[in-house]
Image 1 (cartoon, rainbow, N blue to C red):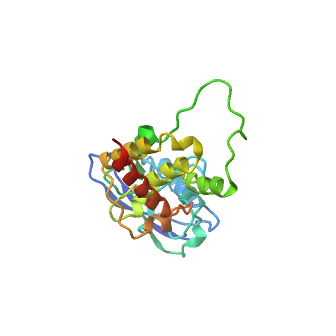
Image 2 (image 1 turned 90 degrees about the vertical axis):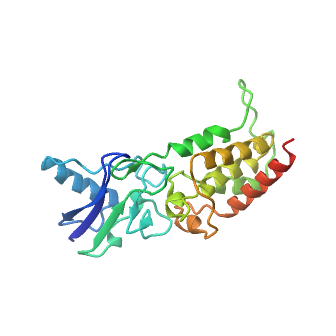
Image 3 (image 1 turned 60 degrees about the vertical axis):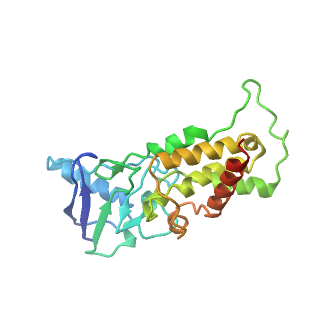
Length: 248
């Protein structure tokens, strides 16, 4: 099938970008969206043009590297998918597809569809860890954890840090990402000792990075490829309130 693309091209964060038109013929409907861009890039390279830059790694919906706005939606029109798992059969022949980078103050454009998401790394570095003694590892069954608690922690830890929650939020909030990282640790006994310091540091870093406040529209959960629940945000707010009251 034939498709028409309008792709955002931008040299770097300080350069003004624009949408550029491209036409592709003979697009296989079984191609993934990233394979389609690979095909476009091959044509651009053969013509001596600069290929479109975008983030990708595993292409299995696991790593969270891929991320772009497709027709105004983070990761595209299909719920529960990353861009690399989106296929061209979701689009109609001769359709015009708009492809843009994630838009957020804390995600500056590096080039074309690539954005700098190192702000997420700095949030994790500020407190998203536990202190553990080095040396002989502890027996795994030394601390008994119920199945319900373990599953709840895994549900929060499933966040892959793709940034779709930020891109789809009208306030560019990182509350879902940050709360998932806080929640999966605070639910487990290993993470309770530093829970108060952790939530205060991570929320402060989130604010320092320039992310907005939670919009309470739950758009983040709707576009999260892992279905991370907004209940994590409620837990983060509760933990932050406790830590702020009793920190002295």
